[in-house]
Amino acid sequence: MKTALITGGAGAIGAATARMLAADGFSLALADIAAGPAQALASEIAHEFGVEVIVEPVDLSDVAVPGPMLERIAGRFGRLDCLVNNAGVTGASTIGQVAIADWESVLLLNLTVPMLVCQAALPLMRAAGGGSIVNVASRVYLSGTGVGYTSSKAGLIGLTRALAVQLGKDRIRVNAVAPSFLTSPFTKRSVEKNPNLPEAFVSLTPLARLATPEDVAGAIAFLASDRASFITGDVLHVCGGAQLAPQPD
Image 1 (tube, one colour):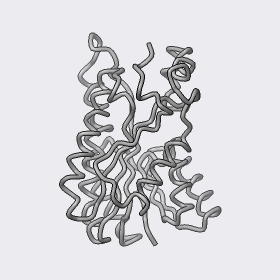
Image 2 (image 1 turned 120 degrees about the vertical axis):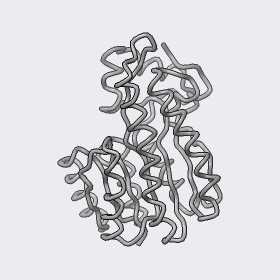
Image 3 (image 1 turned 135 degrees about the vertical axis):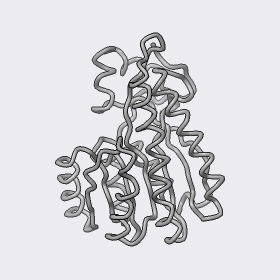
Image 4 (image 1 turned 90 degrees about the vertical axis):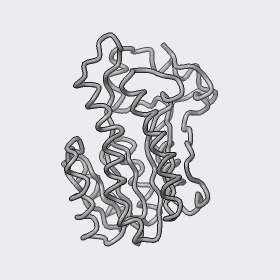
């Protein structure tokens, strides 16, 4: 049975992705610092879809975590076919007020950690004969918002393309999804600062609604599947057309 690792597995996008991959027959490893919600989700998915789901209750901001985590996954499943780098954080917004500690923490979790998890996952994916890596980026790489978050997500696109070139010979496809704004716990702070932000995004989105976690998960599940077997190094915008417009104030 194919196996997938989802970082940030207990979050809105992570949970929706876990359900879709389980429906496609994947066994799952959910990595998240929120151990309680991750375990509850794992139990729910295992019961509903009849697949094995394990939880890795890890703090990915510790760069020593990815290697041992992948070793445990190897011991449990013996293979890895899909990696979804979904864990992320926002911050370091205004250039005049950026503290180096905030800048470094955003780049660590949003860019360095995905690189390290990819690195640690390579032996398992190669042993499986290939697979799919999907990095969760953001529309902001096109439009710009906070300097730390935008820089990290633009860097994640660059990492995606570099790995697609390097890992093609191993039959490992590497792609990214770039969602637009969606209402979730991740965006709660932004909405508290700017209550009009959701309406602003709706107004510049040709499909005239916000994205849902399921919209993003559907794109990830497609890229993880054999239906996307000849797609690598690409960015799938899950924006309802908002990627065609500037970032709202």
